[in-house]
Length: 235
Image (cartoon, rainbow, N blue to C red; front, side, top):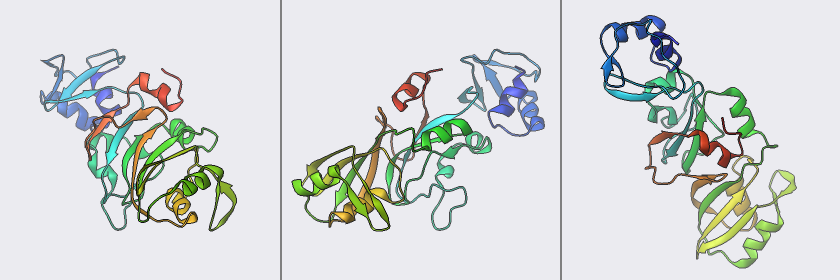
């Protein structure tokens, strides 16, 4: 693929702007300045840098963000900054979107992608990707509450009971809760259904993929081999 087309596909601007970056000697491949927009490169495993910043080529982007509190999972936020502001301009330009939503005050694991088919699959109720939440509660949690959450509780506006796929107390006022559904405010509403209240909420994992050591506000690419942990076909 032509180098100018590669930059354009990765969100580095319009076709004219991408050609301008190359003509201005701002693009390097393997440490060598490339000033020809028509220079051809294979895209498989391709890496380059723009203005000294390294970048990897992906036909479709899938990234993991450690969402801090105080950010909205919205393209048009109303009261707080968007999580999009935590990403570099190329990812925003190419149109990545959050896979599901975390409330403004909820922290932790958030995927973003520009792959429409993947977005649909990961948010579909049929996919049943387990999501793990670390829940801080206002009142002490007891074994009866844990068992009720495992058995199923009825939410205030939904007659069908919802169940935790896994649930365990991790402290006097804390739970680790695993869900395979994605109903609106589900964790908070489930806690309310057992006469408790969520004080803080952190999503720590999705499928078999965790945040690892990713710091709040930082992002990274999801590697091809990690897709299997999300229930996706590798490659």
